[in-house]
Image (cartoon, rainbow, N blue to C red):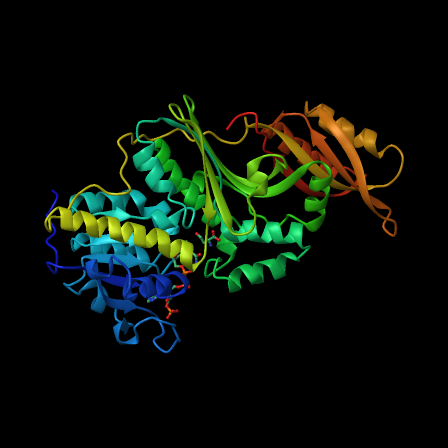
Length: 442
Ligand code: NAP
Ligand code: HSE
């Protein structure tokens, strides 16, 4: 049963902030900035942190507290902005706020991916709004586009770069020859990375975001655990160099397609042809390609992480809610950013029948007869080889880097071939296996 929420003050919407780190501090600064045309609409009443002694430039220190009740239990707060991150206590705080009839704005993709249905239902039951534009694509308003502008479309596919940290790392490794560790440290210092950057590097963050996109675009609740996930740890400078020589770059892509058979979602590094726009999405930029049945392809690009872009998305949600509260004369509203009119339990299609081209890098013994043995493994797995190139040699160990590009092949066959290549006496190691993303269709 939806309740009506009354404005705590007739003139301004009260805001309580959970977290004042990279994003929260920027949101606080925007909220208290004196010269904005929305200053009079919003009143910041409290800011929850863990450590009160940490310096926070431009954040009103008199509002800072370590007591969650001082923010969540403050009757003046109409809107709770959650920018703490992590699963708990963020999830419980958001649930409590919604149950108390407060609107919630969050940038937390982990909680939305894991508890999106529960929180969406709580928002609807309590007649309040749950908004989470900042959880996907940083400052890019992709969720609003899916939910509003493309509402009449059936979205068929999504292909995206939705993790700024890994895109920054791969771009830095390629452009300036940075090491993986140095590039990651720089992304952390710029405020792009998660508190635990393994969430970025091992692609959990991108999986959470793809799960959110999938729920909104396809009306399909796909458990993040069901999404195929590979991070970028195994991508070496050599792969970027060899891919470049073959006319590709390497990006961490999040891809989802929906058809009559169900939904297939995957996040993994992919070779992307240098001539397509996705190859030129560098640094912290994110990009999302959507394909709607009425519109056709749509391309959205912008800064995907960092204080400014994320605060931009958070404040967009806050102001949309405040505007609705005032135009509805203090009455709450039950639409929210998480519902879909096309909720389905999708069949999640596994990876086995995926057909793509593959890049395979082997460290192989550098002598006659090796290629024949390697080729026979591909032949036995019914995989057709498109090209074989020999790159760097390690004369001391008598090894050479072989890069094999295949024609489109079935994933299960490629995995079978990979297993047999690892067992081959002429192969010292299978160094990498990367899918190619072809661009003849979105
Ligand atoms: P952050 O810099 O680590 O800030 C987290 C803030 O929350 C800090 O102020 C911290 O307090 C506070 N906090 C954490 N756990 C707490 C607890 N148990 N009790 C009280 N306070 C707690 O994180 P961030 O980069 O701003 O990210 C915040 C959220 O936005 C995350 O969900 C993240 O995924 C999302 N996001 C971030 C970006 C980005 O570019 N950074 C972009 C999009 C979305 P202390 O300051 O006292 O430690
Ligand atoms: N750590 C995330 C990223 C922040 O690098 O994309 C933005 O969600």
